[in-house]
Length: 84
Image 1: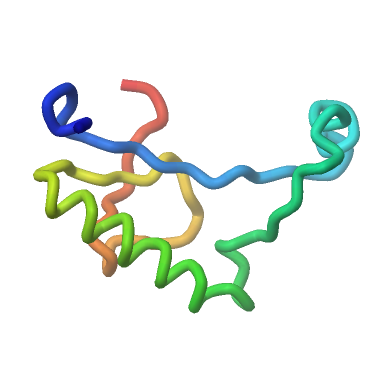
Image 2: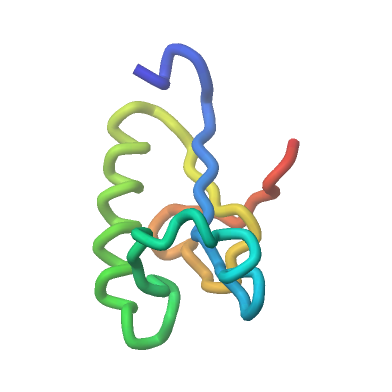
């Protein structure tokens, strides 16, 4: 569906730092998750990136990551910018 409206998909991971967790996300107390980019979650990250890359290729879309510190190029995800 998106392939008819865009050529690129930009992804980013939610990074919650220190006090911002309390200040900005207080209403989201039911939000659960984990740092998928952390060293201990590389297998989960690899699975997610392979799946997203497969979908992007199948639909003719380019996929890029918005300022992520982990290199995702081996999954076909290039480093991109958040705003274009």
